[in-house]
Length: 227
Image (cartoon, rainbow, N blue to C red):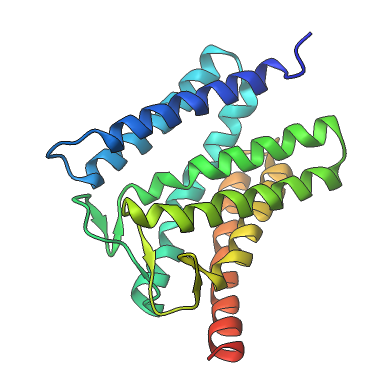
């Protein structure tokens, strides 16, 4: 008997396929700018996931995806705040349509890591304990978000500027991004069986918490401790 359950095997397969497609799309030389490629990949993910969930009868995937899509759209505001108000992040012109200073694809990009984090946390909780799940959520958030900060500047998607960095990772971002994964997990858990209005309210709350954490840790680390 397989150690992994069907929903876990399907999730791993879907994300491996998407990762492979992403590497091919971004690596293939050609005249198309990076921005449209990223827009296409983000759209592909947000179509693949609900379609696979529907075909394979993974109702939890659909509910989680429906929670994360508005949250990902709302995440434009924290990014916009960092770019236009604090001036500590730059989104290079990659040929994508922009919302203010933010490329359009950022409105759907957050769905990908947050789905992985919340899904993994919920599966761990069913097998072990809630404490284990919370630890995994925090560790996975650190791995995915800090890893993204360290790697994605090369594409380029974004890069920090004017702040303390270690291997291209802005130090003040580490704790807020771990707390983003944790708050998303807890918020979804609280509204999983609730109506749409509660899920939207929870998504908005997660975004506001993240925005507050960004402001606090930027002020604490960059102004008070290292300023």
